[in-house]
Image (cartoon, rainbow over all chains, first blue to last red; front, side):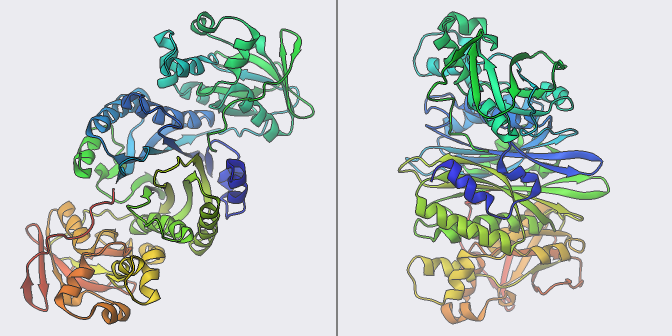
Length: 305
Length: 305
């Protein structure tokens, strides 16, 4: 069964309205006049979401950061997290705890609880995290309209280059840090939430995530590769070819916010307009005015809802 | 690192007050005049919490039931659950979904969201579930006082005998069902919550869990094995010896509710008084008036907070 087939089966189960048909980053439970409760859960599997050689402290950071990024996409402030942890190697476990302490402090997010199990010998590590937050205006990912601008915070592609460095390529530490210690855009998410028509985080790649937002919203999306923000480090590493821009646009793990704003409205936080939503369907790619054929792979498919 | 050592390290991290020092079954977040939010998470690992040969539908049931049992202990009504699921074998995954559907319907609990990952070949399955509930009066496990009665719902030891049957012993289906399809005491939990001084579920064994409640409360506890309710099926299976009573009292997976009530107060639901809290510390075991030496193992240690 593919993930899409499994999700289709899950959608046939009794679903809470807050599950938003399992088509969003997080569950959003309204609470009358009070801020909505936002809940998201993620599994991280060794060899799939992180490399066996990744430092345990960085894995802890990433586990927390990726979940908080889902909260950021809902304009939520974190309340706390629940950890599911497999006890195994003492050194690894202690380094994980140290990294978790650093990350919880960095994001001002306390621990709410959790569960520990004994890690079976030989199997890959599985880590689980559930994050709880409050949001006064949680945007969905399906509200984009034709004519809206498509915007993104920060820079795109750094984490993809960082993954290559983690696998042995040469390159600057700053790119490796973007892969291993992503920064969820919590403050930006809260500032943006009341103003956007749709928002999600870029976890699997700009092109695939923008396509998902467009498909969920029932519109098409046109992206200008030349407008896509790339860091000086990334340009120094990968150069300025169209192939390098496509590589950045299809790399995952950026954890920037991707959002739709009406017409010519400007966002209240630093961000870059990279395209527009259009009538119709699908993804249309240009590079400084020239149409570009879609790459065979728009991003990663390994992440869940 | 043992689980206790790991928990001690976790307690040194930034903790939310709702985490209750990680010494309880669930996090309880007060919400002013509104019902408190109750959150709990559990990992189930193949070979640890369930047997590789256990039917997938039963694993789904158990995953849901064990989490909802933690809600029951807080007097909470389920709002919904988030599932972390590793996609692997199609037949297993489909049977799991069918069992999940049955269990969600049985407990009137919808799905709120989740995450799927690809199950790496060769490793054991890891399943994660987070349950969210609301409670108007969430008891802690640390409120028992000397002089309180110790009570338990239902019968004790059935699931332990069911585990032996799952491993190949002969015995009635009813006992196997108690192991594979436990019933969280949700209605009883809600009825009891406003009246108890302390409550928790019996997941690791009556003796160990009662000891934990006593230790958390700063008192001792005296349990009368002869008063412990055992089902007719279990008595038929294991007989009526003291060894059989001790086996039941130290078996896990009952998912009954264990609670403390003041003096001679009677609970509002069917339950059995099995002992009393006393000044001092530790567990004192008797069997129809005779003191009994504590068994070397009071229950299972594999479950987390």
